[in-house]
Image 1 (spheres, rainbow, N blue to C red):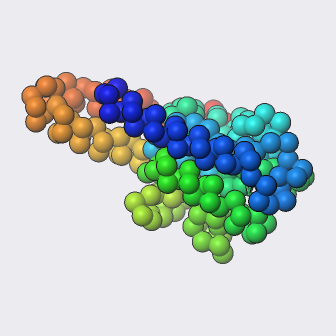
Image 2: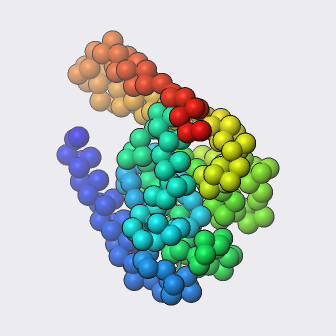
Length: 238
Ligand code: SF4
């Protein structure tokens, strides 16, 4: 990683850590009273893809990490089947404290917690945000949005590609929803690859080809190697 890359990485981490510290001390809504801890989010601070769920469940509240319960384990299998590593993404929720009994957060709670999510998006600057479920779709797309109607449709705003899809918990309740979610994650992977190609091409033009440091053929080999990591199977998360 070039020197500027390392310092930029440190700045991102510092900014995220300051937001995390403020979130950990937050008592702005009633959810914090019954939650064991604030579940801020985790992952690559430089992620191209951000996944946003609804709110922490019991195991997330216990461990302080997002998507580690049964829904999270299913999400991991979906990601693996789509050839995506959890570590390269950033994963968080709309509200950072567990709603009692795993109920959906209400509109006031979403609104009160919104600045934390907005700060995470502003710092990480993902190119793609996957809205997992109705709460995330309404928080990030439109208050009256229907996940059933919008699922699988790309919506681009301010340079970010939003993809609403069903929450993994919905798949645990209704296996018929796995197929459309699989189609969504294949589309996600395809756009991610396109963005990687764009970035590698830009990097090649800026740093390699122009300065004569990287032979064109070598760059093409790297691109092909990157793209050769194909999909897994839908069967992987049945
Ligand atoms: S849910 Fe969000 S706004 Fe409410 S107390 Fe937790 S961190 Fe603060």
